[in-house]
Length: 484
Image (cartoon, rainbow, N blue to C red; front, side):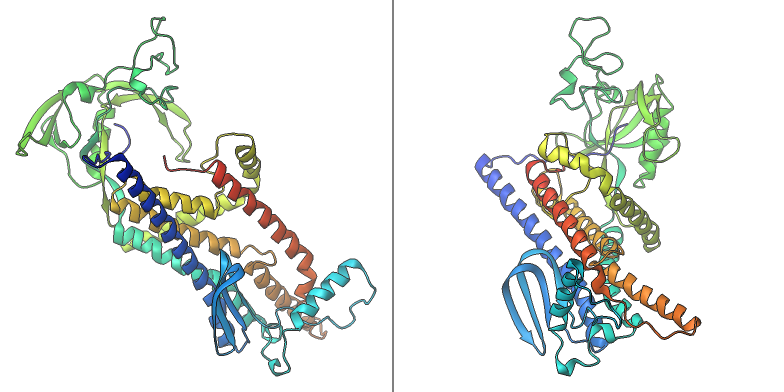
């Protein structure tokens, strides 16, 4: 039958320069909208840390969205709030994130110990005499866990709310029995000419390989049965061989596909609703004979083709409409998205070599590979400018994009590596476990876990993150992932 499609809207009577300017402005609007959404997501993340830190009596001298030079700031109480020039993150500064050196720590001078001492000294310089009991390290382990988990949790809340708006408010694109497009020809699965500007004019073999016109078993792709029968875009299929087809979105199209695929070389009479040249509704009975066509199969439902089969093919593409989903569908949908996002994060290291080749060696970019904030903002701008997208399409894509970004922020920040939030949470949990073991053994409490000892790890993680971010920025500029 063919996948769902949306017909292109043609705007008549508008100069090409006006269309280009309109597309440019819409692109900028999409990028700006995503930037605002991202800044809000970052600020909401940091507010989670800030709220609970203040709730537990910690002193927070700074709350900033962004890095680099301060663009704007103001002070309220003991906290300076503001925005910095590079909107790639944010931070709040809580006094006493690193505890004093543990008793009995070796005083022997080494380069690593000197480095850790410098970091510890810089952190403790923020501690004022009046901060006794207000420093981070002096708070109970469970309060520190809540403070550090609250940031990612706020991103999780935003992701859930945005996916709720997407599912229940906007709805999901669902196939209908209305025809969006009628292709002029039929291509076998995996045809080499599928990416051509007009694949119907490229000679191919029965297996779909391109060939020279006039050679044996070489011909232009056959015309589609639907086009031959006179089906047109905008027709709504009402019945097959006199049997009514349900007009319920999704169900009607599935029933139609099932019947057609089981009817190869068997004539079918389709009753369609259509408007004539004067816009008057009419019903027509059209006889069409589906042809055999090779399609991919996915018998194990893993999303990857594992074979092909011959089925009936009509040669039409379904129009779609947005259908709101019940609230009960949110847990299952969100769970699927979480699993897919975790898989993508785990796969990042193995996809970096391909990303490098795509960036510097001209290899085609992996659409399933990692993408940076520059690339995501470009996708947002591209979606806003696409004429094929309705306003509802654009809104749906934007909400989905922002929801996915917040989900990734939640998952990534909980990776148990310092300086990520998950590293702080892991440190506090380790401290509690160490204290419990000491108590069971009748030994004194070891005290706060010295997070300063993880500073070499923090710098290594930060360095790798900066390198990956730089690679993604270059890739998103020179070889971006696009919607087309």
